[in-house]
Length: 241
Image (tube, rainbow, N blue to C red):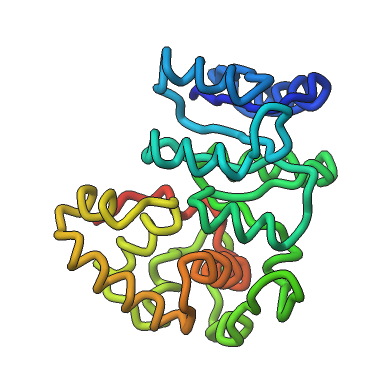
């Protein structure tokens, strides 16, 4: 596994690299201390499995860099690693296609668990966001998300079974899984061999089923549902049918 860690703080870089290396023996971590260096690394070799991106870089706005990388390398997952815990930063990152948001202020154990989930392809959302009912700097989480269905799955249960409880078809579930990975409608269409218009219809149906109006809200709602049903966050790595 190859990870590109973009952070301009040497101590943070060293600490995160140490944690990542302890989780997998075959992981290769490349550090980039600036946006310019990250662009240079990716221009030479874009064959990475994951980007960990700090929002506060000396030579670029992290949000802008996230948008840039998602456009240039749409199949390369990006997870934000930031000292910020602002709701607006989390929502903006997810809305731009980030696969998750990991706080640098997490405890060591929390950071280890978050990185485990990220490296398994899972979706990481700050716990505070999943408990959010209403916020002055971000949209409210739809009320439907706070009422999980009875007979919750045990940890490691079937996540697709959880999604079927809200009335998603198998194809809509496939679309939702790719949506959660930050894929655009065009990439979802390519991956599932559908037309873009068909994907748009499926996305609209998914949002209606979740009682939300945006992709960002969908990510937050599904994250909370999976947590409530005890399903390991890495479920989104399951193959599409």
